[in-house]
Length: 425
Ligand code: ADP
Ligand code: MG
Image: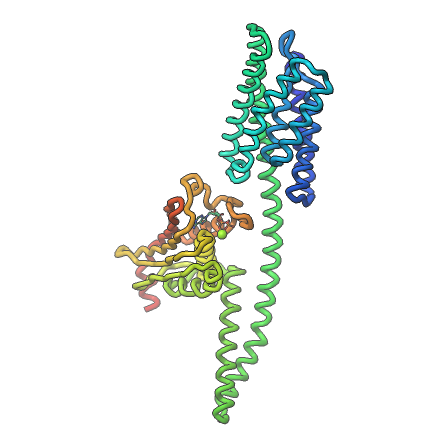
């Protein structure tokens, strides 16, 4: 029983620093890489000293502790410096506790363990959650193997020792998986919280700017009206030319505001008949400057008439999200093809094909889940919104992708009723 009590105490000693870290992180303690590394070193160092001070006595002779877990967490999340600092701390503290066989065991094990932990740091930083969990299991197993092998190199092999070590190994692997899993969940929750705050801010900003855009349009309409009246009056040719230019520019400004409004605030739920070809052209115009910046050429293939029933603004928003993702998937530029075609059964398919980085099957599965993003400044909300919009118009979305080659998003919309077709013709 005391062993279990000691083990639980060890786990608690590691959990507390993890919580402290996330508490401060959640309170938006802005840390750069260097400070974060020191913060990790300090908290995990504390956990290590406490773990080593209150070890678990399994069997008569052996005393174990879970210092390897803060070392693992510290190195994988804090980096090389943290790994080095924590290793030195372990050696120094073990030296302070007395130079015996345990001390040599500690030093030799660390020589094999820490470089491997450090080697996984970069992998860990770029990996998704599943890979991180798998890495943790792998590293925990590696850790206990090293500890056990070094232990038997330095001590006499007895059945009792082997049993104690075996129990410790199992406890170590289970505890480290649990603690890293918990740490990952806390990280994810914090990330989601700050993303939510960010999107909320953006929403407010977008509401405000839409309101402004709307308000600016009213005086502009008045101006346009008077310009039109002037244009109809007999004017000298050069003045007529000026007024004509004013009118054109006014219309262009109006169009920009309309595009912005449909992008920022897709409010109305009205469903209407939409010519997808025209819609794609609009999306191409809106995103042309962005594509140019990323050295992406947008090509359009909209032969035939593709008519669907949808809300224009929402469809616009959805297509912009997909095209923008396609552009962002090509950091070195390339060609993005947007096309639509109407099948003989009346169904309309829109395809957006890029030559970008592509995705794995796992990544495709996660598309559309809130906050799933692999981009540094991504929100992971674009596809979620797009999927919902497509669903609302009874569309089906299909993704095919090959890593390093590119991705195609195809959306199929149902055919429109013949009755509705007749109404408009
Ligand atoms: P965000 O663009 O803010 O990251 P999205 O919901 O639009 O959010 O996209 C989620 C993730 O899906 C992206 O971070 C990216 O990893 C992946 N993704 C989406 N479209 C593509 C694409 N065309 N090619 C490769 N990856 C893509
Ligand atoms: Mg996006």
